[in-house]
Image (cartoon, rainbow over all chains, first blue to last red):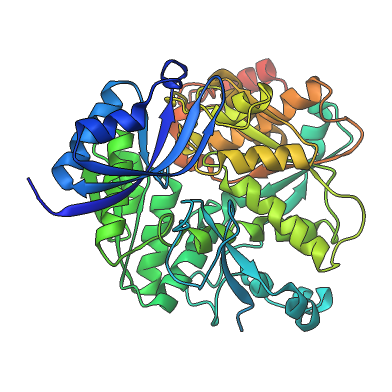
Length: 83
Length: 412
């Protein structure tokens, strides 16, 4: 697995049950990545966030896997590209 | 010849020089091409436009190229027809179809956006262009890249139907089947776009690519006599087309080219992939992603990049939106073919079906002008109507047999 550093721009969609959870904080605690929130919009039903994640490739992949496992939708910042 | 004033973030307003970038470095919002409208107003008139060749490039001052276009020189200026028979069936007074199902060269509106993307790719010096697509975009990129002498790569889910693959492979593109879900194809292509110096038409060329859709709107205005239909119904996949048709109308108003009233814009989706119309009907601003499940594959985008902006267009224009079921889509495809002789793909069935629904609901009045945007050809989605259009009548080779059948069917 590559040990090179990556800086990724991703779009997160939080379902209702995670809106009040400190998800991004937990990602920073569990994995060796730096998270940087660029924009966020939150209602009582959904949360959408543009996030930059910096770290080693392997840690980035683990962080993304964790987010998906707990129910956060993770897309590249471009969203759906298959047209 | 260019009148581009740079790129600007749609969210925070930050400005950028023209380059193959597509997200704001500050807030990650999408970038939009900006123009020097004052200069355009001084340099071009309606009369001059009307004397130019009948292609999308007659509006070139409002397209994001610095030089003359080099790809897709014959694209666009597709027919806009009055649909008398369909109007009668729908019970409306005045109905038009803008018909990109016959666009050159690959029979969809994608030829517009790809022509701009590839012309711009050449300006930037890209030697390889790419896209991720299951249908119209793949056909268009492969075809136009071939005509432009560019290498191209098209990424598809590995289990895509043979018929769709054929329509792209024939042009000699490098077709890569990705063993994974649509989400995984999205992620891979995003990564490739970041790591290789390729012109990914709807990633790093996206701000330029998207501008090509404005020509659909410019042509509507010109072909209606430099005025707008009162109600315009547009299919929504990622949501880019509807925002660009609105931008096109606004630009023509800004330049003083239009007479009469403004248009109300209506978005059309398939019920099996309707994240935008759901948000619209719930009065939300944020789009909840869906897992698409519809025969309208070209509209099957679960997390539309321009969803939020599509909502703004429908609301600002005082339009609305609706979605229709797969059964309604098929019924609408057949209706359009039988009344107007236009065989559109499933996305066109969505748009016709939604128009019918909005008229029945009283959202679109019956006595005002309505235009339906048809974006692709039915030959591309034949499987959707397989077994739904009847069978040929088989007879023995004699006239009595034929007359018997004809009497039963009515003409004799």
